[in-house]
View 1: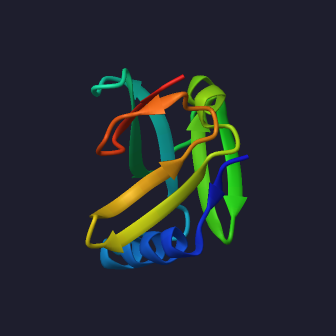
View 2: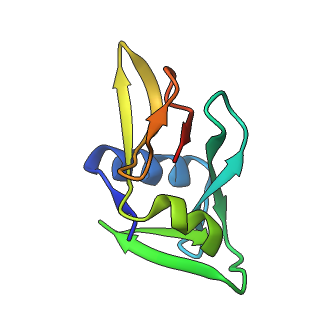
Length: 108
């Protein structure tokens, strides 16, 4: 399962409204190679499922990830911060053994 914090839920809803996206769209979460720690998170809105997609819903937000990414994302929480120390989405990933200072990449 991938979880969504209340703040992330509000921001996803706002972004979908601002982009005039219908309810058929979902948030695609994936892990790609790169970043200073080796792996990076990627977020996109999408409306086309792929054959090996894993689909979850938390707090009314539909999240979809490919099977390979899910191995890195299991039990992760998507959060959003708008504080002075940085604004944007970030992941609380219990599978990460380390992450970079900016929170954009991680290693397992």
